[in-house]
Amino acid sequence: GKAAFRLAKAYLMLKDCTSAISVLQDIISKLKNTNEGDAENEQMIEELTKLLQTAHAHYLASKNIPNPTSLSKLTSLKHRGKFAEMHSNYQPSIREFENIEDGELGEGNYSQVVAVRHSVTNETIHLPRSIYMN
Image (cartoon, rainbow, N blue to C red; front, side, top):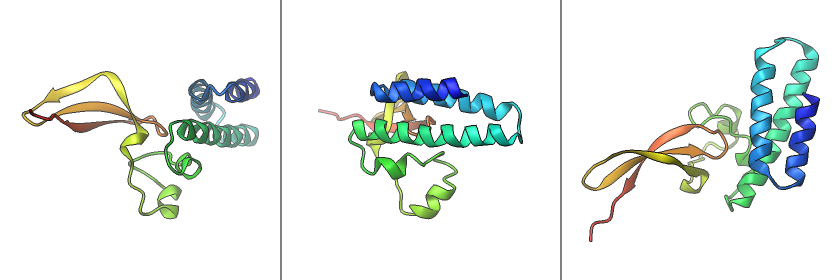
């Protein structure tokens, strides 16, 4: 846990937010699956989660997404929890999503459906994209 914390901090100092986010998500999920209920483990998860929110905020700011600090606290698009209480009028912006390579799922007369990943929650959803006819 402590080594991952230091590694993520180093990545943030180097402005490599995606690597920091990846390291933090991995170690948090591993810690949650081991030693549940251990007070020291819970404290480490809390510190890593705060650092993960900081990494997300830096990443969102680098992508010019509005309100990166508050948006970094979002944990799920489907189950917004405390975030929804604070930001009841939140609607995801298209700028918060990244295309997934080979993410095209289907095509119709006026649109195609593509898979995209939310920058903060890492959730994959499917969005229609308009096809403009000339």
